[in-house]
Structures are given as structure tokens and as C-alpha cells.
Amino acid sequence: MKITIFDGSFKTTAFIRRLMQGLVKAGLQVSVIGFNEENPNPVSGVTYVSLGSNQNKTRFIKTSLRLALRTGSLLRIATTLKLLTKGKRKVLQKQNLDLVLNNLQPDIVHLQWTSLLPRMEPYFESRSFKIVLSQRGFHTNVRPFVDAQNFEYLQRWYPQLDGIHSVSKAISRVGQKIGVPKTKIDHVVYTGLNLENFPFHPEIAKNKELQLLSVGRPHWKKDYPTAIKACAILKEKNIAFHYTIVGGQGDEESLFLMHELGLENHITLTGKLPQKEVFRRMKAADLFLLPSIEEGIANVAVEAMALGTPVVSTNCGGMEELITHNQEGWIVPTRDEKALAAAVQNFIVLKETEIKAVIQVTREKVEKQHQEAKMVSDMIKLYEAVMKV
Image (cartoon, rainbow, N blue to C red; front, side, top):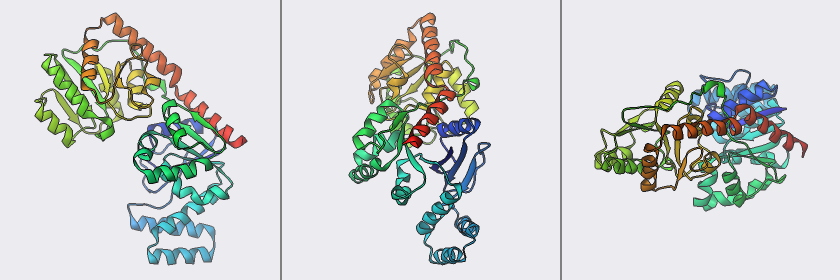
């Protein structure tokens, strides 16, 4: 099979990067198309094809001309020059996509975001390839239900799809409220890790003060304000702790709350850190907090669990498919700082043997449900199912 992943950018998610590596290893031909030119960290064996930079006008012109010249058609070249002269960027992007797909001749085009559906409209009626869509996070869980126009648009096009990839059972159920593909194929495929990169030692972090950690950009759906308010409760209880939010640096709401609640010495907001450093901090933390309002299944929580760091998560999205309360970790309601603080306090009084037991079953859950090899195998099964219809 020839799989073209339409990500909109070459800077793919961790899930897609791992998937591409696995697909190449399995012998599939994999290409990625996106609206950019720079790719500092490509996956070996993957073909990257630009549709024209959205950031650089000169590069967009060069890419559009190069694609037109490749056809050998004087009419196509003349049309491209005319469109460039008139500044018809959207028309040219549509042309570039058509030329790229004609050249790649994929069996499947795998869309990573619902926002890319408008780009594929011309291909639903008459095409030589199948179209698969990934359902993930905000674009499925939130946007259609706060934007009536987006909901109506998705309702029109979901039935034209050949298949859907859902990152969790929870998001699959939400997606069914929008629509189902014409084939009825909707496979849940969880994110997968190469566990060789996540060495496991069932050791307990023994810090002088409790080290709490969260990782992720300061988007409203991450709901760091609730975690910060929970920290204020811990402070009132005279609990010695420090909370670090990796990726939260400069967030005005968090900084304001920290100042208002007198938590400047208890909370640190860092910028984005290299993955190796993030994993080091995960391993050193006593407890990982996921206070989100919305997630599919959070990669950072899977990574923390793989490293043996206990996790307290809200019951958002598909997180209860990853964590069974009081088994692989702890689940609390969203937007509830009291419940989050109580979970941390309950963790503090656990015996070492109890924490080690949680760490052990946590790793076992990841090994069973989130192996990279299983993720790749399950995605190939999805592609094969779509090709048979």
C-alpha cells in the first residue's frame, strides 16, 4: 500500500511520527504532504512533498512553478504563471495538491485534522484513492459543538469518508453524533510507544518535598488554573510541595493566579524543553498531574506511566480508558480543585508498597495497550479494511 499522510505541516504529532516509522519498517510506501518547506527532523524512508509555503511568498512561487514544470505541459505552466501574477494563492494550492496527488498515486490519503476536509472536497466524487480521517481532541470533542456551521459541514462530509481512526473509544462515541463513514469503518487505535526508549525501574521518587509535574502548552483545555487553585489548598494544609508546568512559561492567567494566591515560591513555569529533559523530569517527579478539560488520550500521561510515574488525571475524553481509578492511577472530576488536591493528599499517605503496586500495574497497562508495534499493526488493519470495501 501507498499511504499519503495529509498533516497540513511536516511538523507531525508524536503519534504520526511513530506511525510513519512503523509503516516504513513494515514495508509500506509513506509520504507526507503539507504547506511548509522546512523539515529539520524528517523520518527516514518517508517522502515529504510541499504544497507551497504558507509563510514565505518566494518559496510558494518556486514550489508552484516546480510542480507545474514537472507536468511538461505548456498550458499548465502558462496557467500557473497567470495565477501567480494575479496572486491567486488558494487556487494555486488547490492545483498544487492535485498535481502532487496525481504524482504520488496513493492508495489511501489519511487526513490528520477535520480542518483539512475542505481541501479534499473535489476528490470525494471521483478519485482513485480512499480517504481516512483521524478524530482527535478539540477538533472533534469541542469545535463542532460550539460552532453550528462546523457541525453542519462535518455532518455533510463524514458520510463520504472511507474510514475513521479514533484515538479513543470516547472520541469515537462523540464522532458518531456527527456522522459515520459510508463504510461504517471506525477503528479505535491508541497511541503507541517504543518502550525500549522508556526504561522501567519500579522505584519511588523520594524527594524532600513533593514534586508535582504537568507538561503541555498553556491552552485553556489544559486547565492549569484548576491545578494552581489545588496547589493553594495544599499550601493551606502546610504540605511541602513544588509544582512545575513544563511549557507554561509566560502564561498570563497562570502567572496572575500564582501571584494572587501567593504561590510564586511553590510553582515554576518553564518553556518548552527537549524531550530527553522532559522524560528526566517525569521520572524524577513524585506525581504527574493532568488537569485537562478535554483530551483524546494524553500522550504525556502515557509517557509518564511508561516511566513509572503515578498519574492523577481528570475524567476528560478517553482518560478513563487509560486509567482505572485506584488501579493504574487516580481519576478526578474536571474543574474541581478540591478533588484534585484531595487526590494529592491521598497519595501522600500511601505506603511505599502501595505506590510500587500502582507503578507496576501502570507499566503493565501501557505494555498491553500502548505498544508502538500494536499501534502500527492496528493502523495497517484499518487501512486494509478500507481497501477491501
